[in-house]
Image (cartoon, helix red, strand yellow):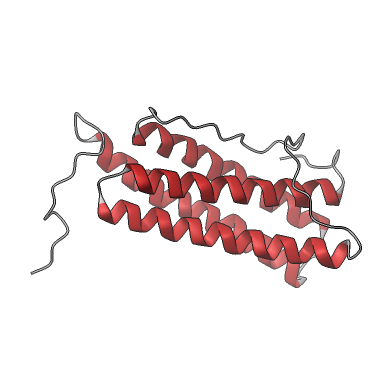
Length: 163
């Protein structure tokens, strides 16, 4: 992903916006699903996105100490725009989330180039990139399981009960 046409401030604000939208998406999907295990995984990912947001906010504050963080309504940075509606099936929402995770991974990998190699920020952004791929893998596994059924989000109440 080529981010050379964007300033650091613009990139950081876009990253914060993306993390907020991603977290909200996971919380929304978690509310819609009847599958308790999937809901737990989505809530976990939403918490991780919030932690990413906090770290990016710290970077912003360190680089722009006199500026208040104002998340733009629209961003020109090429990050996924997440649109959801109440009638969207969970499987479609998972696909949107999967695409967003891939783009977020690419974004963080490119964003890390704005910082000194091997610095804490550089390494953390690369770590975020790999975490986003981890989220993608979780979502892929859940979507594949969901796609095995004729009706998405089929749930048997005791399917995850232990011995």
